[in-house]
Amino acid sequence: MTHSQDSVAALNRAFVHARAHIEGLGSAPVGATVGADELRARLGGALPEHGSPPVEVVDALVAATAGGHLGSAGGRFFAWVIGGSLSSALAADWLTSTWDQNAALHACGPAAAVVEEVAGRWLIDLLGLPDEASFAFTTGCQLAHFTCLAAAREAVLRTAGWDVNRDGLFDAPRIRVIVSELRHASVDRALRFLGFGQKSLTVLPTAADGAVDRAAFHSALGGGPGPTIVVLDAADLSVGAFDAFEELIPSAKRSGAWVHVDGAFGLIARASRSMRHLLTGVELADSWATDAHKWLNVPFDSGFAAIRDRAAHRASMTVNASYITPGESVRDQIDWNPEWSRRARGFAVYAALRELGRTGIEDLVDRSCLHARDLVSGIGGLPGAQVLWPPTLNQGLIRFLDPRPGASEEDHDRWTDGVIREINETGEAFFSGTAWRGRRAMRVSVINWRTTAGDVARAVEAARRVLRRAA
Image (tube, rainbow, N blue to C red; front, side, top):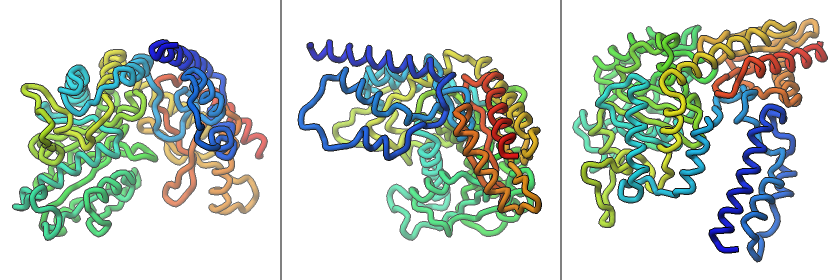
């Protein structure tokens, strides 16, 4: 075979395997059915001395990994906040690999640069963010936080008379970062990458609803002078709690703080007229981070950062080298992203936005929230189950109670983890555990476009069977 024939043959085999995987999502177990040791035995061994035909490599890879994949692309995965891949987005992602453009500069891939430019403006419009905001497509919300907080660091130090790009952080004015006790760990990680230690954090308690305590927030703002960054939540990971943006952001801005919003999945709720009230005032912030590979349902990896202060954004990211030819009247992605060589993520996002349109995204958000409510009420209403948090968005919490007389809270914790494990072992659904207010609980998250009422019913029935056996 010629190299071209080898490529076509390998792609055809990949299509056959991909089609079988997609068509089997509704019937295959959602959890993995083989462990790490078995996968190592199949995949490991010495590096081959000689190569193999591409078709053989594809077939061998599929065979060796069989049973080691989660069904997270399907509609019965309710654990972490992981979306599936819309049909057009998946196809566009295949084409992205085929076109193999380096989406760093317009010169390296003109179409990749322009499609990212268009998709970014569409997202700004969809989310109702300021028209003047700049943006970046990143690997995920982790790097979106990094991008936004790098711009924040540049801006607040510039206001304090310090040029961080020229002078670095040594001897710079100390920046304090006000965060919630329930913030996502990716925020801490981004801050660590940017040179902020734990001592930089002012950690605020949350109220009963999971949102940051307002009195504590106002008190912290008045707690000292100097450069300040505030991080607020648009749907925390456990219960989907939203901070009071309409009240807190203006207060923070009056004190001179930069406000960043972690909207990994909750920011997309702005697309729903029935959920938009949860984010009233979020557009007043300075930067926003979200994931397209969550509610927009594009393949991994796809995050999105939006920043009001374009100058701070560009100053914190841009780079120059003798062999880089800046584009004239075009957008060079390297000016806005922390990466150099990078995947052309705009193609999949553009495809998803075209497939769904504004009304389709709204419908996806609303359906997910409805399925989450039905799932939590359905399982939470079973004997031996307790609803800890009914969904206000698409996240809920359920606890399972040890039926033995005199069972302690620690017994209920162990029982909850055991029930989650047994439900997952049925293969009918997949959930994850968490700790909420000191108690173990089962997280319920619905964000996949493939989830149906039938998938919800199957998950409830699986839980019913497990609890019946355990009673």
